[in-house]
Image 1 (tube, rainbow, N blue to C red):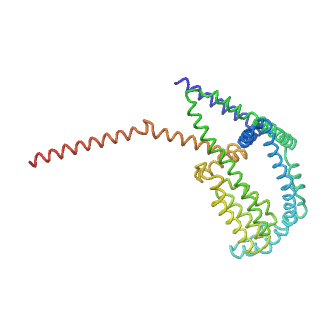
Image 2: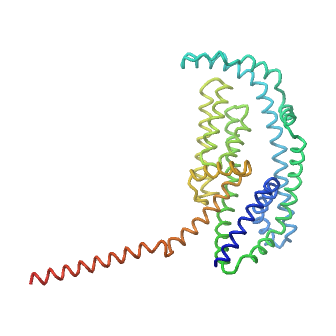
Image 3: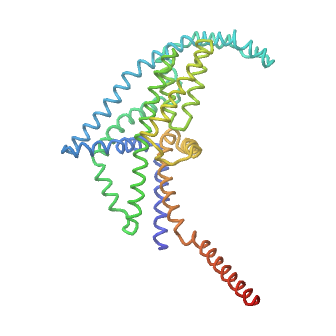
Length: 377
């Protein structure tokens, strides 16, 4: 038993060390594994229709590729047009803030805001702001190692589709080989944990992705009706960050409300923004989340926020994306260990002592009562 524990401890330390050392290059493989995991159920359904595994994977891969291409072709021109519009209007927005908001703020808070040189900022924006493409090019040219960034991006764009295809094609084979490596004494336990993790993780990821997409569309349509210049960008961003409870609502209302105040300079349009997010939140709470996600993770909102922050601190942006799936799996393990702990001798020992103590008290009461009866006679 001791040798077995030392083996597993050494194995975990070695795997964690390898993972840490390879973390700079492991991101595309993690993304590919996630995509293969999400696409495997659809490939299995196509196989049940008597299609070969390779043909099923080709169909799923083609669907994923077409969805990505459509999103790029539709969103990129729209986002570019909205960014262009914003860039041209930012100097006017700053001028309005300077002539309207700042004087009112000075009178209300009794502050001297002349130290803020808005004239220089406004002039710099008029001289330097251009199209979104020019801004992105300026940002890239200012990086210290643009060549490395280009090579890394090209590598990711090549590796992720290729690795996803091969993982998706051989997914069942890989799972079977991993099952062969599980020690027979722990096989049932590992299978139970894997089943629970797959049930929680698969349902949560697919459902949450759909909810995020639906919220992004609802936000974008609603903000477009309100008339915001950045409706599509703000809607997509708010939908994307909605995987953290109430974060999409808070961030979306704050950003879109501020944008509405600056753009329209009234309080009617910000109220429209609040209405849009309130209606979207009601649709999510009543329809989308119960139907597609439910309470699959069992995570408290505070645990969700902590998981996202911890993932970002440890692994950056990729850690933020993988924080909730990892937390959901960890919660499955904790729930399983809790079940066994509540049935273990460590937990039941105090209960047994308590029951023995109660028996002693009951016996003592019986003796006292019998003595009282004898004295009374």
